[in-house]
Image 1: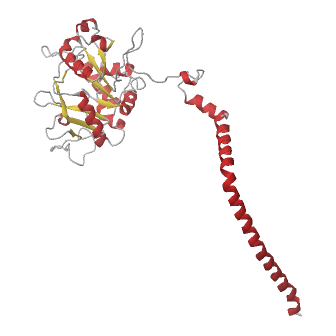
Image 2 (image 1 turned 180 degrees about the vertical axis):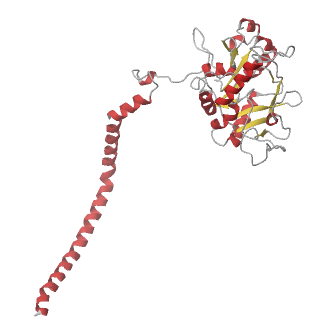
Image 3 (image 1 turned 90 degrees about the horizontal axis):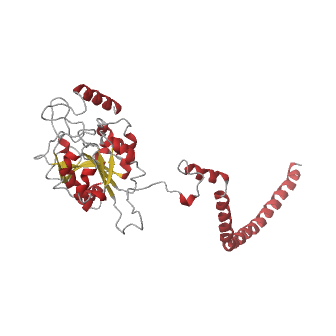
Length: 355
């Protein structure tokens, strides 16, 4: 009985297997026909579908809202083609069009006083002949007495009495205004440039990948405050110093912080476009002498400060350390702006800002 009962089941399984076997070739044939046909038809349909899909996305309210949010604040009502979010320092003639000249790629700016006009004159002539845009910040309020120089009308003059270069830079060198310039030179006025060549300097920092730099100081003629700024005669660029000290402040190949490496002095800094955008934000509105700012420049080095900050030995300058705005008169040792107490207060205040 058991064997008879099993016969229908066996018969069923055989018929089902034969049915599956007959379906497999038919299904395979249909798949082949579908894929062959889709190779001729699909590209057109896919392209149309993609185009329609992108068009729908671009026309969606979310994208329009994003466009408005990405615009500079206040420009939302304006037609898109009329918006100019950046500018430059190129001077324009009152009538007609400017002369077709090669646009400047770097900017030289310095806080100057009429007492140092001889040194400033030499700097301006050298940088102008190298195709730089020049901006002079007149901290003594004297502008007309510079008209004796032939280059006077070719530079930009900004005057504010008793203000330092950091005050001027914060207010007149906004990153969007100077974004066309690859490098920003923000120098003091008491520097000698007889052996300095701006174009060669720029080519060196570009080749070396220096985002923040300064020309080395001629140790024979300069007042050198920090060893790392002194010129090395056997190198084109140096990024660190080596010195031994018994008080635990030695600098060696393992040093990773200022003043052993990744550091420059603030008398003659040179910033790349990207570095300056960062540094500008770090300059406080009430910053005067920038004490302590130099120790924090590593934040703006666009990477490893030990590699991207350096001193250029091949192009060097002289630091005369002459008393200027807020300096000390060597004859009577009195401060121009106030007593020693005021200077100590400012020193402590600015250092505290950047700790």
